[in-house]
Amino acid sequence: MEKTTFEIKKMDCPSEENLIRMKLDGISGIKNLDFDIPNRKLTVFHKGQIDQIEKSVYELNLGGKKIATEKTEQIDFEEHSNQKKLLWTVLAINFLFFIIEIISGLISNSMGLVADSLDMLADSFVYGISLLAVGGTLIRKKKIAKLAGYFQIILAVIGFSEILRRFLGEELLPDFSTMIIVSAFALAANGICLYLMQKSKSKDEAHMKASMIFTSNDVIINLGVISAGVLVNWLNSGKPDLIIGTIVFVLVIQGAMRILNLSK
Image (cartoon, rainbow, N blue to C red; front, side, top):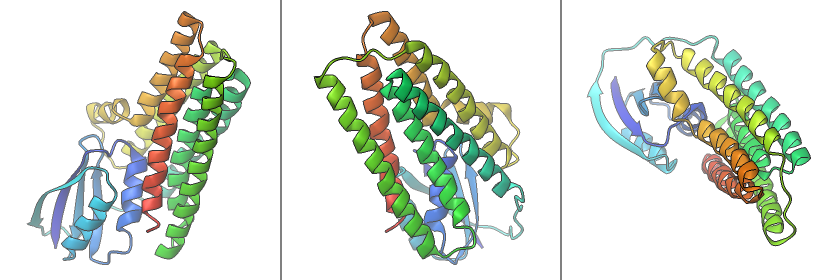
């Protein structure tokens, strides 16, 4: 048995973990995957096939880099019986806030909230893909990934079109208080999701959990929308909302492209 350690520079949250699991699924030589999200490390326990494993990791474009390969005597791996339950929990939280944010965004005229809702939906897709494909074939997983990726891109393009229309047309001033309050709750929800996922790996060190939460892209996005809400009120302009919306839509499309990579 060998174990190979990778540094994954863009592995910020459990979404990337699920993408990596799906990408490596089907490589028969892999016996176990151990994720250290706060330190952005992945350890693969395997019997041979290192070239195929390396290629798959690099194809995800998450900044993967092999650190070392060494022999190991470890053959017993901890089974996380509650992992599926936790995946359902974080999926439900993400999808609930997708609904809350997109409704709030449309009512308050905030493109930042609408864009953030799609980021929540993107996370729901990743968790959903993992759950729906449990016990299924690799082909089935790829088909689901392709549908999710394209659907995400379509929604993001529609969002871009609306942002462009607002930039060129009459300015709509979003409700800054709704932006701030809803994003604050979304921030808390993302923190809970990341905490639950980290807890499932039996890593109890508080600083590691905090590191994962506060370096997460989701948390940064939530803070960005809150900041945009403050600027909307301060400048009495809807431009900060449109700017953060544009940035988040770009991130949503990047996430969709990662999902589509799984269908290749």
